[in-house]
Length: 281
Image (cartoon, rainbow, N blue to C red):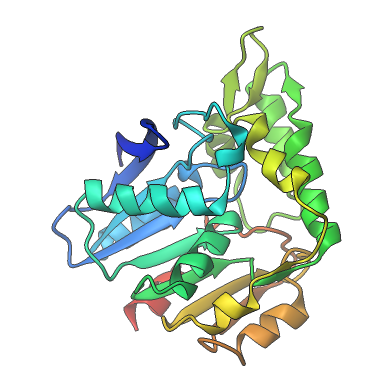
């Protein structure tokens, strides 16, 4: 795993985006991984290690306002059009040529659907517990959870918080959750332990007119072979929407895991193998 930072144009200046990279820069296949709304690049470390061992170059991004990336002066920039532009500049700056495989969790999956639906020629698309339709009550719940931005006394409290918030979280070992927690915090100006994202990332979501998220038009335009992963107790991706995704647009492959809520952490051998075998087909 090799960490890096890259400056990308933003408004009249630039912002620095952090990323993690695995594998060889001249690998025949490249995968780009993008996390959920309040998460970071480390979420993909186990999947990335496996893919790199099987011949991929993997780039996992900290989107702006998360992890090691810069925060924006204007919270209005925490929006899909900006993320789209940033990813395009990252790909150009890191000499990533199309087509690539896109692996997106939650927000990262939404971004992947937007890009693919607007004509970005991904080789394959993996959507981790997200689809083109999310009920407004669930969207509001995500906004409330991210906007809460609690303070902690220790990293162990961060681990407990994550386990509680994302329960039931599926086959993630205590050691893996400790790693996830260790990459999920920062100290604020008062010395308190906080989750490592700008709490203002949620402002555009909270300011928007309440309504369902409906991206079916974009989904129906996707050409890339698509894999959808779903936790069977997820409210973000309902069973109905997931089944519709197998019949519309790219007619996605669907794999559902029992006893897991949103999202899948992609830490266990079965989930990792499912993704890799789909990409290898």
